[in-house]
Length: 243
Image (cartoon, rainbow, N blue to C red; front, side, top):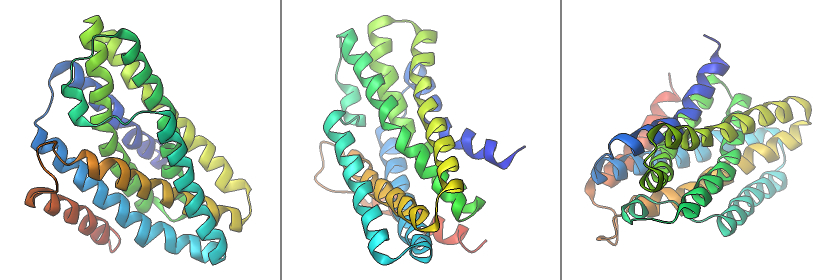
């Protein structure tokens, strides 16, 4: 199978898997929170150990810093337009149909930069792209659950709910295609900026979404299992980096 197709399938699998779970059976909180902490560790490690060093080899430091800042600003802007979708929010009964539709639209827009993030890994190599795709895929499973659950609650239509929620994987594919085109046609400095922008996006997602979402509303900080999950995510990237 074409390696690019494998990457796309993995990166886009999160919303699809989450959507299926949302209309069938919700996983335990402990498992969900642990996977979010693991994904946070992977995203931070790949940003710090792979993407930023690669960006520095392609562009001057000021350009890398600019890209990092732009990635943060981009995700901050998305955050202002689109509400957070956290696992705890899924427990609240949402009976308004347009609220469920809004959540679907919000996640649809939110996923485009994640496709760009996956594409940025192709500058470094297949292994790095695979790591990013796995992390983003894991990150999007809870979001798939949270978008499908309220819509299914309102409509009771399992197939329609699954198809609509799973369609939020489409912008990941579009972002990947756009990113591949940009990285192949622009100068190394702009590639460096885009790679560091991707690092900014991934670190913002980790700090603003994954880490807070992995903390239960009954806790003020991580418990031991989530700390271990986070560290395992970092070790996972380190080990794959030496294969």
